[in-house]
Amino acid sequence: MPLQRFTRVYGIQDAKISALTADPASGTPTYGTAIDVPGIKTFEVSGDVEVKTLRGDNKKLATNSALSNVQVAVSHAKVSLDVLVAILGGEVTDSGTTPAQKSRWDLKGSTATFPAFKLEGVTPANGTDLIGGDFHVVLHKLTLSAFPDLGFAEEDYRIASFTADADPLTSTDDWISIVLNETAAAIV
Image (cartoon, rainbow, N blue to C red; front, side, top):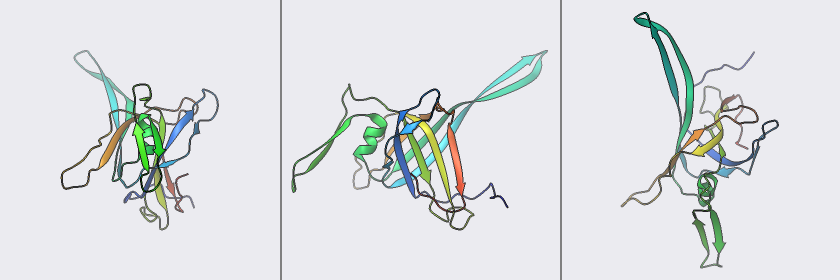
């Protein structure tokens, strides 16, 4: 019997970003090592539809709709310097020895590259109708669409967030994938 194709979706347990390192016109895309998005809180996918209406003879004759954009909005509880490199560019430099170690992310005009990346999020096991199953959302090729929200908040935690626009892969035309697993599977 095939797996049911509908489910409730509860919670988000993990999200990872992987740099898109190659997307050849004929071939297979390649990605860098997956980077954890620490303290993932939300992973919201939305899209824009462009609608064209044809009118004539003083009435509506036809309507055509086309998907014009897919966007993701992510919020996470902890700031990761490695995630900043993956979505904005720049570089991280580690220096010093205990007790004076330092990790420093620097973004310069020459390193603000806004690289392409893949983003995958997953529910916890049992976050679906399937006992022991999970639900994955994969956006195969993203580019940051606004500078990420960073900074501080008085007497409160500051939640980091970013938004990115999706494009179909050149190599496979994959844009977004949703996977419902009977048995929970980790993001690879």
